[in-house]
Each structure stands twice: as structure tokens, then as C-alpha cells.
Length: 195
Image (cartoon, rainbow, N blue to C red; front, side, top):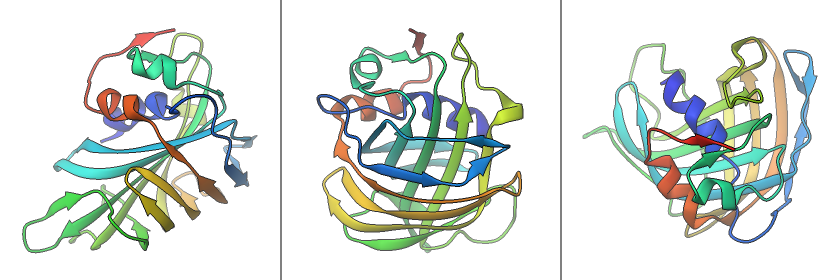
């Protein structure tokens, strides 16, 4: 799961045209502040340790206007990203699908046991170096909290988050995204260039 999300962190900020700055982030992770410069989203399929699922993917990134890079299957260098994955889980079949209406999603810790929530969120905060390699000492995974969607329009979302990370850090914020068509293709590709 962590390896898949490391890739997602880099794909995170794909925008339809230019930067879609519509995000806030309050708090620090491992002592580092984060100021989003772009906020984008898509509907797609993500691979988790337990299988694949349809998701709504929301990305806040320190790099403005990265859609062109991601559409070209290239990860941006030296970026910080917050990726929120949300999925509606059918608890009978354990199949996940992208959200179709507003709801509150519970952050799920895949390292634990038990059934996932019907409205599942996975949150990852990643810092990448100039070679597009995630820096584990600066990165973190959500352990508890919520992601709330207040607008669902295809693959565009508005809402808020309140997350506690495995580092013990706590962050809150908001997002208002545009849908990025290239984000979905990047999400479904396992290897990427670095640019």
C-alpha cells in the first residue's frame, strides 16, 4: 500500500488547465509546514495491499500546474503532496467505487484488522526529493480522522479533512478541485518518468 501511495503522491496534482488553487492546510507534519499551490482530483482505480478499488482521488500539492507533467506520465521533482483517496465500499462484496454524492469518509488504517468502513478514506502525506524519490523521514500516513465531501461533480470535489497521521501530527484543511483527465491515467500506471 505504501509503495502505491508513494506513486500517488507524485501524481497528485494534476489539473485540467492551470493551477486550481483551492486548498488550505493547517498544521505541520514531522515539523514541516505545507502550503498547497494546486488542488486537483479525478475518479479512477487505485491498488491497495488488499486489492484494487474505484476511488475519488484528491491531491493538494506544493507544485502549481502539474497536470501537464502528470498527463505526460512524469512526476514533478522536489514536491510535497497530500493525497486523499475516498471510496464507497460495498461491505457484502468488499468492492470499492468512486463517490457519487457528498458523504463523510473515515480514515482507514490498512495495517489494522477488521472490516473497512462503508465510506473509506486513505490519506498520505509525501515529500519527494530532486530525483522524485519519497523521503520516508518527512512523509506520513493518516491513522485516524475524516475526509468530508460537500460537492461531488464527476471527478471534481469540494470538502474538508481532519486527519491524525502515524507521526502523531494533526492537520485540517479544505479543498475545492477541478477534475484532471490525466490524473486517472497516471493513477493506473505503475512506472513514471521524473521531470
